[in-house]
Image (cartoon, rainbow over all chains, first blue to last red; front, top):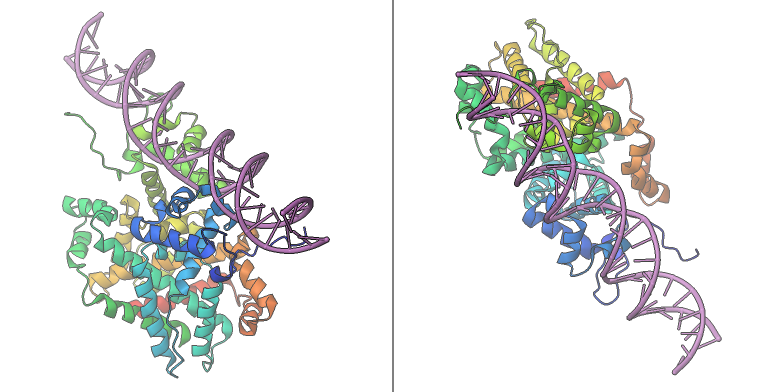
Amino acid sequence: MAGRQEPVIWMRPEQARIGRPAERSRAEITAAAMDLADREGLEAVSMRRVAAALGTGAASLYRYVATRDDLLDLMTDSTAGEYDLPAPSGDWQADLLQLAHQARQIMRRHPWLPTLVITRPTLGPYGIDLLEHVLDVLADHPADPARKLEAFALLNALTALFVQNELATADPDAQRQTAYLRHVAAAGDHPRIAALFAATAPEGEPRDRFATIIRRTLTGVLG
Amino acid sequence: MAGRQEPVIWMRPEQARIGRPAERSRAEITAAAMDLADREGLEAVSMRRVAAALGTGAASLYRYVATRDDLLDLMTDSTAGEYDLPAPSGDWQADLLQLAHQARQIMRRHPWLPTLVITRPTLGPYGIDLLEHVLDVLADHPADPARKLEAFALLNALTALFVQNELATADPDAQRQTAYLRHVAAAGDHPRIAALFAATAPEGEPRDRFATIIRRTLTGVLG
DNA sequence: CTTCTTTCGCATACAGCGTTCGCGAACATC
DNA sequence: GATGTTCGCGAACGCTGTATGCGAAAGAAG
């Protein structure tokens, strides 16, 4: 049991050992899974389908990934590598807002991401790079570290919630969740709720509403 | 097709028709599912196991519930019935904070609830009662209805996030998510992150930290 | 080139899942 | 009693995540 490979799930995908002929590695598995999720949703990401997308068998994946949940974590962390991290400008508010805008774009690119971010918060290598960057941006800020971590987590979660809502109201079939609401509103029993729904055409550009929420939260938690 | 029962999923459980000899109804199914989830977690709530808990067969449940997801929605809405809704006091901040504290207690009672609230936001009958109550509390507040709905949603989501985090740091095995973090911190590559974790013994009572977050958010969104 | 060790790919199998179908039995109404 | 409806549910379908074990390939050592 000398050369037994350490089961460090979180090795960076590029560092992960690659298979021989087909050059398939953890990175490729993650990429294939993300592709599948982008096109057909999270529930389409089954070990069999990911393997099929790679032209291999399901059991082969377990040489590179311990479990399906680990694969999901790898997908999440991989998206943290899609950030562009410019040098801090000195205006931490502006820098964090810009990061939040990027987060929103990334989550819109990967509609499965908000759910993962919220239900299984994880920090892999890329996520830690991102956190380190946020700490750089906040280097001169007087808040204690715990508060900064709180801000980081809250930023991610709020963005995920916002995008989730954004995507849900856009998708035509996802209005299942408001089906009963509209039923009730139409029944006339709850006039205020009916009015509420008539008025809930979201005002203004989503980008601006998002920026407002993030700004309010930032000033709320970091002063 | 005259007496064909309208497939209104959201009928209040008590109003739902009950089975004959065993008196099992949608309410009992929901209650059994909640019990199971309380004791063994959400993933233990399978149609077969819920049915077994009721001493019946899995297929029988489909007479009362269209799908498993509908059952989950029923569970979520049922918890909204656990609120105690006192008459508005005139101080909407205090009233909403008190509701938030109740929400936290309810979610701690049902550890599966935060995940459901976040991933499948739904308003059933009980949820609408709760929303109506919030609208009562905010009756004299000058904000437009859309803003009030936003506050309602944000309150729920934030509470869910808080409790989720609270439960995750408490559970001994759920520290899987910080396993890699501690590994990295121990490796010495990221001294700031290591320091961050050393300092992240949460300061103060959870109840107070929660109240602070809610208050900040409320004043942020409702002025 | 041969041998030995390690790793890879994967066929197969298992237990469990959500859901559908169809039928016999129980019920309510007349 | 007859009729029309509803209920309970055994059985089946197609799918899932994962464990096992084996043949083949690759790499290292001689």
